[in-house]
Amino acid sequence: MSFEGADGSGKSTQAELLHAALAAEGRDVVLTREPGGTELGEAVRTLVLNGPTMGVWAEATLFAASRAEHVEEVIRPALDRGADVVCDRYVDSSLAYQGIARGLGIDAVLQLNLAVTGGLLPDVTFLLLIDPGVATGRHVDPDRLEREGTALQAKVDAAYRELAGRFGERIVSVDAARPPDEIAREVRERLRDRS
Ligand code: TYD
Image: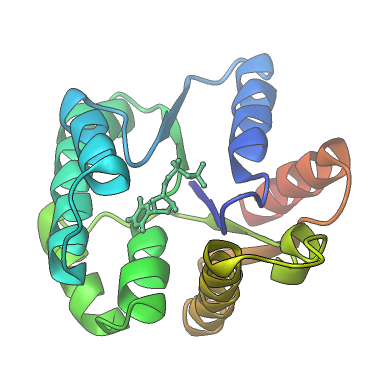
């Protein structure tokens, strides 16, 4: 299963809480995150987030390279031994950020990612939705970067909502503007409903 959402949606907290809840029930569960989760992933994270400017395809393929390694080294081995995997960001991050917000197209980015992961998609994806204006609306006089940030966040939010419409079987949308424990309870219940 994976958690998705814009930056600041609280998805990392929810991934941790679900991991803890499943572990407390005695399940073998692995918590991991993207970009990251492997040495290559961490290197890609540094390169993409702090490195030289690059084109969108370079960005998409670097995230895909990190994902390929992540699946091979961490996720597949865990699934093969029967563990549950909770992943903080996965394919939908690439679909939302590179595919929709940055314009490469959902289908092209999905194809790339299906190829590099051997077609591995989550059984269920929890999408944490929060009004992008809530986090950034407090800046009375936003500077250029803040405005750009807000515009990108709004695009990413719209992108995720589009994905939720397209992959309605897999993606479960959750209202993230609530206390973390309340959200965690809903996530656990929704997961139970599906199994
Ligand atoms: P990170 O610091 O992990 O942010 P967060 O805590 O919000 O997860 O940085 C990840 C950034 O990389 C985030 O802005 C989303 C972006 N990203 C993509 O654009 N495509 C991807 O495939 C992935 C995994 C992340």
